[in-house]
Length: 353
Ligand code: NAP
Image (cartoon, rainbow, N blue to C red):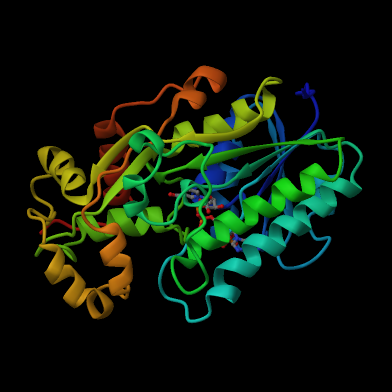
């Protein structure tokens, strides 16, 4: 059980990212000094939204350069911190040829590097790691066999690999590595946040996060002809950010926390959005699975195995620990989706039909 001194700085890794920049913003608004790591603090697009978040906030932003695959590069940012929130890790599911280099190496080696520095810096008492429900299950079909038909924190993804669901593999291997390293010492404890698909407004247009791709694909007309019956757990980025801070500061927080507010298919998301944005080319129908399987490798760059094991399954997530232990309150799905869509329109990322 750790008590964190809130006068000490908090380190947030990958601070420029979609989720992390919200964590930084909330910490700054609550008066914390934030040691924010980015890959290149001279790159204006990586840090402009962080500097904006710092303006008028009572906390203080201090930027550090750090790269996941460079050993020791997080140490300076971690110095003096009792709480380290490790969020940096690539969230991409297409556009790469080498899954090890694109995903697994930065996720696993990066976690090892950050935690090695936590071991080296005596001030660290707690690490909050951004894991994922991808560390809990690999393919949606697994819902048919899990106890009670619901994904819980007791479960681990044992089915993903570099060749099949490499992003999920990167997340489960990184989380396992973190628990292994944590168990070898007793000064700091580990809490993991395991969100489902995170949606909601982004503070930056620069992120590579797949969350943004999902919304762009829905609203850009790319899926005008229809969408597969792919269901997601969905959670608002503001709740996810808040949960990291609650997990960091609550002495009773321990173990893993699923963060997931709702489940919805792509079509259900489009229906919610169309009610407020009828002038955008949102998908209006669901494609049959056999057709999706036929065209998926070329049209979407995903394998037939992925379609077979993920299209057509309804998901359920147990979010009770997040509510009971952390006190997370989830907002309605409509608010999450519409705030996200509106932000993308305001930032010029979506056009009317
Ligand atoms: P994001 O905006 O792409 O953020 C990823 C961050 O990782 C970026 O800040 C990126 O830095 C950093 N990063 C990537 N490779 C790096 C490297 N080699 N060295 C240092 N930093 C590196 O994506 P996100 O959605 O916010 O994801 C953040 C975390 O949440 C990830 O761990 C992801 O797995 C997890 N997560 C996301 C979701 C979701 O739906 N979005 C759901 C569950 C879990 P640059 O800005 O320099 O590229």
